[in-house]
Image 1: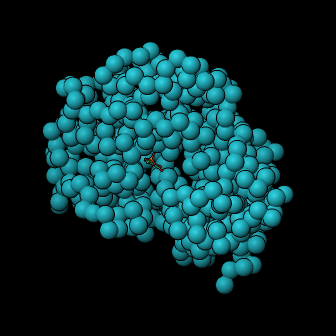
Image 2: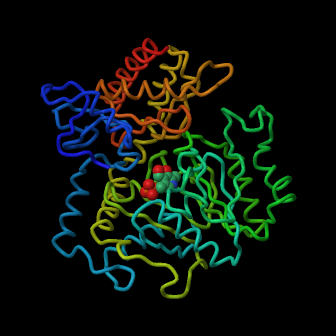
Image 3: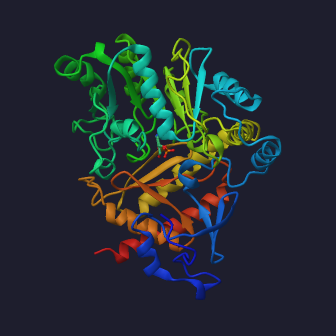
Length: 445
Ligand SMILES: Cc1ncc(COP(=O)(O)O)c(C=O)c1O
């Protein structure tokens, strides 16, 4: 909840007399994690109410892939505002929504003709996927992974398993969800060596879970993130994803790729699952689809549909202004080569983070795909034990020095600038991150 108009960013800036500093920050922290009060934003920068310009390596949690206020996205939004803002897109037709559905169907690596259901957020996109999977398969159970984040409404929350705080005191969620360990090769849940484990984490689903308490013929869908996001930016090996895809196919289980965070060019391809060469049955999108306007999409392959009017619907999904923004977002990503830039700059960023790792012992791991990168902060490199407090201290120090960052998982810091970032801007961010790490290590107990 916002605390009121007197709030000021806790960073000394040109208007330092306005800064209420850490008291306000502490208050804000009861529900928010960063003491920044935004006033405006452009490109890769956010300016706060005190006039501080912050370099944005958080992208509004992977939302502004096209950068803040991209002129083509703003123009599309303005043009749609001049046409109409709402007539309700589930009962009536309008061109901009149909064009977006067609465009997504063309681009998504699904069996054609893919269909889209539009909503307002990632959690809603996953709710629709849960219902669609159960409806079309007639099966009740769902498979998901430890470390997953699929949203916070009670259906999607049932699939979410990244932090206990998400589940605490609000359960029970929907029944029928089974979680199994994910392919986390940095901290293998089975304590195996990834170089010769034969991706046991995929085999174990069939060899143990399916044989002991999860009848595969009752499983409607398996939900997975091609790169686990909130769980700590965990990149699974391609072999794991391919085995999972085969396992689902062989058992008539629908594979749902949640690309809410990893999609829309972030990993250097439009959809992260393209890196693995698999075709899921359902894809969910949100976050950067609308470049900041709320829109979620559930894309389903041929043959998957409710087929009955009213079985699933909403009021605001596929709002024309959000659809216009999404179409412009796709144009910008493709026409301005932002996806290619994400691949190139991702390689550069990864390299720069590896250099930081050489200088700073607490950086246990550097991982990611494209511009979906993270560093993992550990107590020591042998145990790889997460050092959450130090990770949070580094994020705090970076923000106070003008670099927006967000943590994820037990001890990772994500580094996710807008996809139009340049190597010079990456260098500037790395310099601040370097200084923030030094400061946080010095201050740590
Ligand atoms: C992979 C993934 N799925 C779903 C969600 C939920 O999206 P929203 O916050 O828009 O409901 C998130 C949000 O972080 C996410 O990262």
